[in-house]
Length: 306
Ligand code: RIB
Image 1 (cartoon, rainbow, N blue to C red):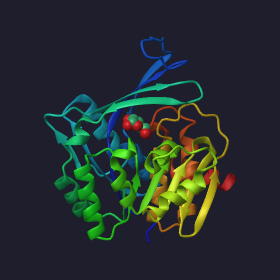
Image 2: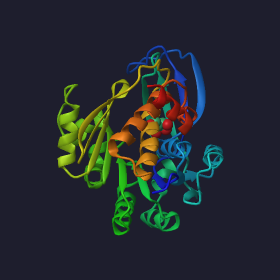
Image 3: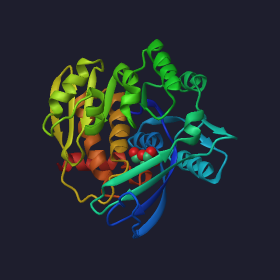
Image 4: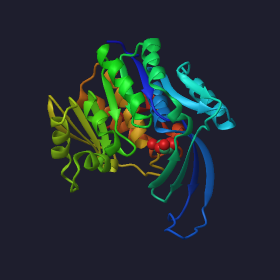
């Protein structure tokens, strides 16, 4: 095992248009916001940045349009040392965009349009694995299902573990999520995959129930409470440190990138979850998705302090 594993991250690359509001509007209502900012985002790209800042060698499987947003997002990834040969630039598709409203306390509401992310074909997915030869694949459900199926197939043929962050809208990608080696979901996504409401406190049972459906490791991230991990070693609750959250956008992505880097290093699911929880807890203390992803040394310092 290497300290700097090779990770292929598959998912969206978006530009986040973020408004700070006192309270998000109801249907038909207009509210006056306090501030506006543009950040690099997209669950895939955020996770790639998190994994790279956690010390992994990262390549991104994604799509961008030939527009100003796309050019800027490509530069962002390259600036992080992320390999972008497997990012396709399409003439006829716009780059992905997310509209995000953030309330005091950091809670957010997000709507996004994948745009060029949906231009990534099954052939591009297969060739990305051939080119990058990853130790681990980390994928959201943001690419088209056929593209993800090709990614899963090629990974299985090469015995490469797939960590699936089953988001957004996990019910649509249920078969893919449950076919992954490791599954990471939040509480809402866990309930959607299990097809039932879950009371808070039911997360250990839910993680075990999801594990019974296929993945060898299941993590349910539980926001400010931390995470629950179920694996062949048992089920553990990993509490998060108390922090003052200003923006929770990308907290799950911070978790996934740092978690994947640790899995690639050969750490146990429990140890990888501990690191992921710290990464998420640092990210919520900063604004924006990609700018909030912590460095490995920040995570290590926090782990030593706790
Ligand atoms: O997970 C956060 C991300 O979700 C944002 O960066 C936004 O782009 C949306 O896709």
